[in-house]
Length: 333
Image (cartoon, rainbow, N blue to C red; front, side, top):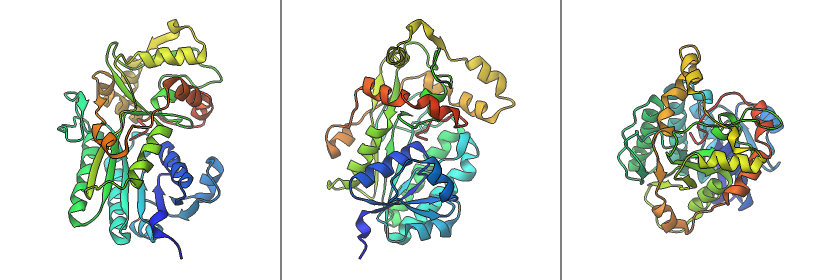
């Protein structure tokens, strides 16, 4: 008889965090299902164990999600609209379908989240910090969390884990891989998107995935709706990461240049992705530090790979991945 308590459905397994969480779950003995519209194509593009159970279906179709979630105890909702497009029209219906499937299967939802739902007035972010989103995606993100909170009133359990900018092996759509480095065999310039002296939070994907699995398996009591903050790598001076990238690649730090926001502004009237990037620029202009005290109370010390090792692992294949991946997004979105 199948053990439903160790079966997870991952929606968004082709995304960097979905893939990392799936691998971490399998490493702990979980059975993992993956919902995808074209499993054959996904199998060719991903390096995941053959034990993944692929289910053909669309996260926008309620019945597909309900069928895929039968017999599971966990739904990892890591699906995101590609290239910043049509967030309200895609993100909210997909989440609604996951909520309905979780209710049907009595599964718990794990949703990776962002800092989008905080405005530029927020600095040290706690789980209960006031959310005043000033962007469209921030409003959608806040609404997604609110829908999970409301769903808890009728028995749907969920965990939301907020984190800063993603980076890591295979994170081809991250700011590090696509915004700070030009695609190519060897970077010649490192761009700094941030305002000098302004801090920035980064989340190394393997650490975040390990954190997520520890939360899922935690035996400490939880409410039906819980939010946790992942601290990750916080740099009080945001320009420190570009400096470390240069060191990791053996580059002269004088090759660090300011990110060409002026070019993004010029292209914004004609390119949707550039408009969305410009709208989110404030995330590089104000410090947003994650307070992880609640997380540490549940799982102990946060998994934390030294930044030098994390960058070595990331940049070993970031350029190869970025050449085959279109678009730029805050991948923990």
